[in-house]
Image 1 (cartoon, rainbow, N blue to C red):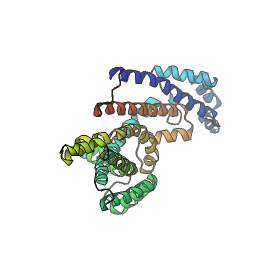
Image 2 (cartoon, rainbow, N blue to C red):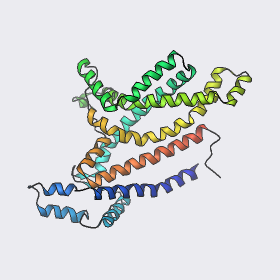
Image 3 (spheres, one colour):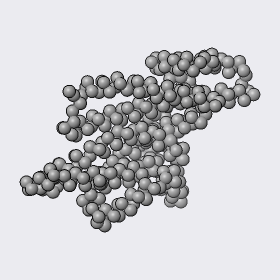
Length: 322
C-alpha cells in the first residue's frame, strides 16, 4: 500500500504540471490582463506598471513566465495577487480553513443521510416509502443550489432563526469558546444544506440501485439458504459490497465541493476559497488563479487517493500489489 501511495503521488506531478500549464495558457490567450486594467487608472503611473512587469517577468514570453512561476512554486512562492495586494499563499491560507470547515460539514451531512435513505428505499422497493423518497429526490435534484440558497435566506429573514450570511456574528469575539463554536455552527446550517441537498438526493438513488443489485446476486441467495438472518445479510454481506461504488464517488467530492461552493459562498457571504477563485478569474489575477487551480488539482488527486485506500480497506478483494 505504501508503494502504491508513493507511486500515485509521484505520477500525480505530471498531472498537476499539465493542469497548471493549460490554465496558464488559457489565461494568456484570454484578451486583456490585470495590468491592462491598471493602465486605465490615471492614479497609477506607467513606471509602476513597468516595475510590476519586470518584477514578475510579465514582459517575457509565455514559456518564460511559466518557467519562472514553476521555479518559484518549488521554493514555496505561489506569486503575488495584484487585486488583493498580498501574497497568494497568505490569501489561500486565510480562506482555506473556512472552505475546509464548510466542505467537511457538507460531506458529513451528505453521507449521514445518503446510506440510510438508500437502504430504506431499497428495502421498501416500489412501496410507499420508496416512492415518497423518490419524489423528494427528484425535486432535490431539480432545484438549483443558488435558488435553494435564496429560498433559505428568505425563510431566515422572516423567521429570525438562522443568520442571513457570513461565517461569524458581529459580537463573535465576545463569545466564549463554546459560544464561538455554536455561532459558527448556526452560520453553517444554510450553506451546508444548500451544498448537500442535491448530493443527498442523487447519491441516495445510486445507493438504492447498488443495494438492489447486490441483494439480487447469487451469493446473497446462498446466504439466505444457509439460514443467516436478514440483518446479518444486509449489514455484513450486502451493504459493504454496495458501498464500493459510493466510496469512489466520495473521492471526487473533494474537488467538486471546492468548485461547487463558489456560487453558494458568494450568495451566502461565506469567506471561503471558492469565492476567491471566482474573483480571481473575473479579475484575471494571474498568480491567484494559478494558486487556486493548483490547490483544486491537489484536492482532486488526494480525494481519489483516499477513495482508493478506502476501497482496499473495505474490500479485501482489492489489493494494489503484483
